[in-house]
Amino acid sequence: MTASGAYTSAPQTAADKTPVAIICGGGAFPGAVADAVARRGRPVHLFLLRGFADRALERYPHEWVKLGSAAKYLGANRKHGVREVVLIGSAVRPRLSQIGFDWKSLLLLPRIAKLFLGGDNNLLSGIGKIFEEHGLKLRGAHEVAPELLMPHGLVSNIRPTAQEQEDIDIGSKLLRAIDGFDVGQAVVVASRRVIAIEGAEGTAGLLARVAEMRRSGRLKLREREGVLVKLPKPSQDRRIDLPAIGTDTIMQAQEAGLSGIAVEGGGSLVIDAQKFVEAADMTGLFVIALPASAQTPA
Amino acid sequence: MTASGAYTSAPQTAADKTPVAIICGGGAFPGAVADAVARRGRPVHLFLLRGFADRALERYPHEWVKLGSAAKYLGANRKHGVREVVLIGSAVRPRLSQIGFDWKSLLLLPRIAKLFLGGDNNLLSGIGKIFEEHGLKLRGAHEVAPELLMPHGLVSNIRPTAQEQEDIDIGSKLLRAIDGFDVGQAVVVASRRVIAIEGAEGTAGLLARVAEMRRSGRLKLREREGVLVKLPKPSQDRRIDLPAIGTDTIMQAQEAGLSGIAVEGGGSLVIDAQKFVEAADMTGLFVIALPASAQTPA
Image (cartoon, rainbow over all chains, first blue to last red; front, side, top):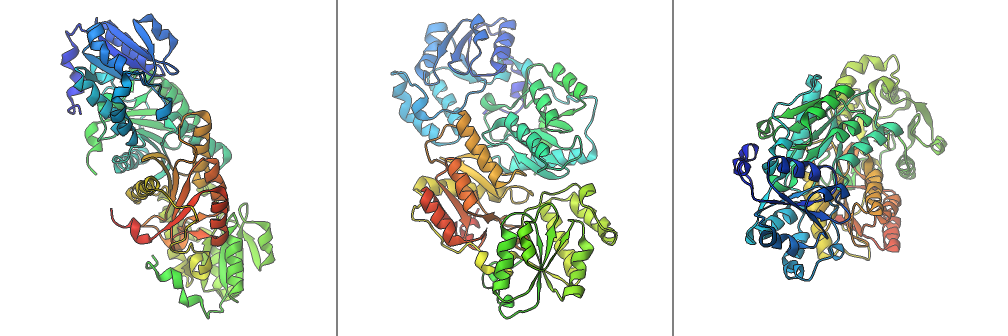
């Protein structure tokens, strides 16, 4: 696991001109990471996950792969001089039979199968270990592209009220309480009541559920009541599973009738923090980046 | 809080012929409780919550009330000789402004308002205290109608596998971990992964979400994979918030593609346990009633 704080400066990438391999899932983050790395003058080699990655990423040197093409990723160091690999973007966790392992990767299957028996944390950190044994370093997106990291102390013009601060605190505590379980980086709390906890449905699904409960009358709240708290899990490997947030989250939170969003400063990925806060201000939501330390005391 | 075990025998109701007031929300449980109490030869007086209670309950002596008619419930002891009150059935938690307090109840408003600022646990146990100060005893449905309590050791013909037992264990632990938060009596776990945690959407909403994630391909599981674990919160007042389960839960779990359901023996309400297990057997799901002690070690 990355030492706390180490990922904010990431000096190892400053003058480094070796290519970075990026295994790209769905969504906008793979492109943002590739762009940021390229802007830093480092070549990239993309492994585009079939069924998930955006076709627009073909603008970079790439190859389309199946999730199970582990041998291809591992061969990248020999073929392309790659030493660092980044895993980024969304990918639905497949059933083992659907992964489409290639023949070479089947040699790794017993280990990968064992990883699949654990939760996601387990799976991802296990994959990291396999990379490292093959001479590749698993890097967090924020390590090769620190500009994507949510800045500390980021806030919108609108600030949370004392009640909203209390709700943020309750949400943070709940997320800490379930840290040991491989689930849930986000929660919605309204006037001290926990409304919804994120599971496999993801943050968009969580917010859609809150919106639906309001529409149906199952949830009776004031206009603009409730906060989304979305934080990295304390025990999670930040190289792989930093929560990502964007202007779409702002729109979804607005649809859900919420009053604001709390994230962790230096603990979330955002494509454009400035635009993110501007979108919040435009919709009248608050956004607050909590200090990581604010989460620590129980 | 009722001492563990005391609620299974409920000897105080055996020869008692005083009327029981039942404040009735929605669903089938209010009728089942009224029927069971009446079968025991005790008269009932129903307070039917407008907008929630079933019209068929008018077969018993009753009056239609708004949620806020607290003074009416409290006057029941003088008017009808009532000494015990049961709160049963579903009612969406309203906004304070929608409760429709009558003038007399407004005298209690400052206290009730304060209760509303806490979570549901807080609200309900506070209401219990107000009853007791007015000479009424708040009773659990299982105390006046013990036949509605899920029997210990109840099992279907189909038994959980070792993997499913492990999932049940993970679900139980997760529910214990969030006990202090006023949310979630149920969770779905599949092959060690926590899929969904219940919030304000309720168990039917939780199961519909799992079904939807399977349909959309967001969740890739084997046929009949995943268990629903639904348990009372250890710190919760069992007189008010024992989880209720029924044949509808079986159907919803089947729709969600689950393999079974774990509840707590002596810790859930069920209208007809025999029918419940028969429905499970018919659909091929397992049902297991865990001993309460199995939940206790962390």
